[in-house]
Length: 73
Image (tube, rainbow, N blue to C red):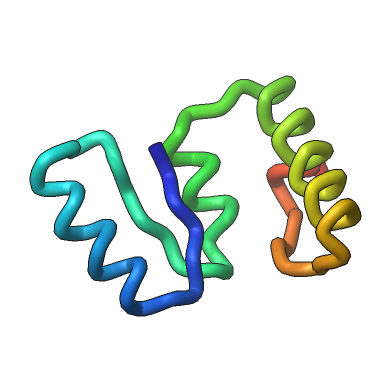
């Protein structure tokens, strides 16, 4: 599991939770590519995750995640 957040509090909480769940890793807001690498997503999963992120951002009226490798660009 990968969590991407810009909150230092959430990053600290994620580190604490990782003691009990070593598969969890917390990434800073600009580390989408690192999170995707950590998850080991296939090319298809990368494209679909980028599409899902864009769809969620549009539905929420946000523009938060920078997509690069995730979108296949």
